[in-house]
Image (tube, rainbow, N blue to C red; front, side):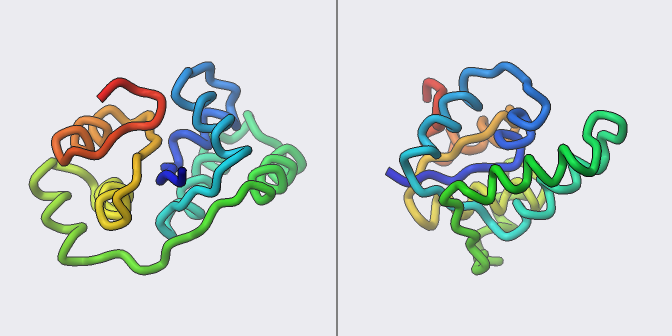
Length: 133
């Protein structure tokens, strides 16, 4: 089964943050294709750059190479009429609402470590990867 992955999951791998949801998503991603909104690409790279001192250029390049080997499809067609109401209703950033909108539009579970986004997903009836609904 496919699911939507947000940047928080992948960033947790980069910084070796121990988390059952992130580990479970990683294992599933080795067997399954996943989808992410186009902003995912920017968010992952931003996290690697913003945490200066923790990631060298070489380590960044290796990590990005490793995640490029995963079957991650980038969705470039967000629904503005879907994203903005979700952001307002759940007090999400538009960025986080884009992940939720994609999960709703494609009827897919969501993998996230962001508690606000997870709460909004539960409220919208979206199942969460690696977490009890």
